[in-house]
Image 1 (cartoon, helix red, strand yellow):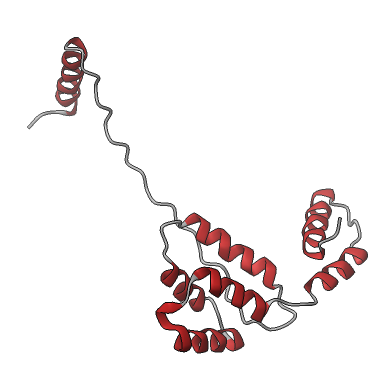
Image 2 (cartoon, helix red, strand yellow):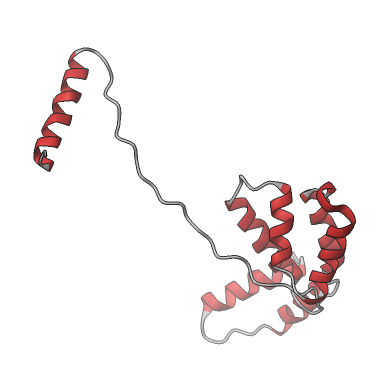
Amino acid sequence: MLTPGEIAHLVGAGIAAAEAAGQPAREAPVRTSRLKMENPAKFDCKSPTAFNQWWESVTMYLGFYLETVDRQKITWAGTLLTDTALVWHLHRYQELRDNDTWVNYSAAIRTECRNEREAADAQLKLGQLRYQGDIRAYMTEFRALNNYARAT
């Protein structure tokens, strides 16, 4: 059995011989681990839940896992739904089965679950926002509310 030092010496000699022969040396394969993200929170489609914020977390998650196909995305999204939203999802699945697409599903869930008052509620909270001694926290909250209020 070779020692680690002997293995390193043999590899180095092989690289030197390949370079001397005019062949480029091959790099050793890099071992990487697959990053994993936690699922977004469960969603129930009930007002006054902030749909837009939840939906952004869903689309960011799926952007991280690009190899996911439509059927998998739809099934996975269904696992995040509860209550009224889950009933809606199951009914849609029973009607469309494998004929659904992610684009159509996305449009349908936005229509079904979007809180029409979300922008108005964010605008109201924006008007009530007060500085409480932490400028970073204030600006973070201001930007988030401003985004959801669709204000300029």
